[in-house]
Length: 250
Ligand code: NAP
Image (cartoon, rainbow, N blue to C red):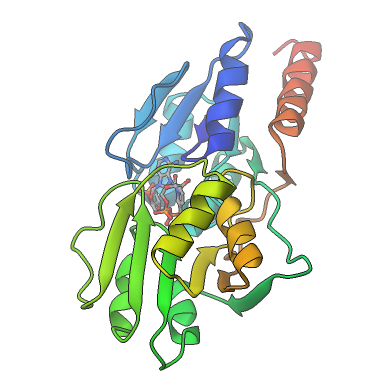
């Protein structure tokens, strides 16, 4: 079972769909109203914590759990580690590498979304808030700023600040579009999670090109399991387990 909600999870599921010796289930939290169709079986919704996940793993007799959730989805990653320990199932994580600052970047580090909002300071700024809809409400604590909020699904309830625009869009995003958007809205600060990967990196590049500050939220601690960074490495891990099971005649 792949715990998903990311591009990498979809790509891994697509690669496994072509393999007859592996039966794959992709698990989604159910946060996106209209998830893309998948070439493997999909189950949607939480499991009910560690115990629920462990029970599900046992009931469905899975051999392997792959945590390909977003780097900021900390709870499910920790739950997965604990459920794997309870059931003895093989587990590993697939998590893209974090972005690193390069010359020209003006990053302000933040530990969490509330910390990032605080880092904006007291003087009014024009902020591009690219952190998803679930935590956008933390911006209510700093109503002196004007916000442009981008998310896949609508922010509900809307923010309680006087100056806010919303844009609903799903990556990947292109540099030229990001530059045009930041200019059109006269943005002076970007707030982003250090998600890593290419699909949403263009906003970081655009901020650098325009000389804007980026409040970069660091990743929360993940569950303690071995991690790979690419779909190819994940496929190698799966092959390794499939081969050793075959050799043992399981
Ligand atoms: P979270 O805080 O780590 O998880 C909250 C709860 O949601 C979990 O305890 C679990 O419920 C359920 N859950 C999370 N991922 C699941 C999955 N793949 N399959 C089944 N249940 C899942 O996660 P989150 O930050 O709310 O993120 C939810 C989903 O959105 C994740 O799948 C993640 O990959 C995706 N996502 C998150 C972000 C982000 O910035 N956080 C960005 C892009 C995509 P139970 O305890 O009931 O099992």
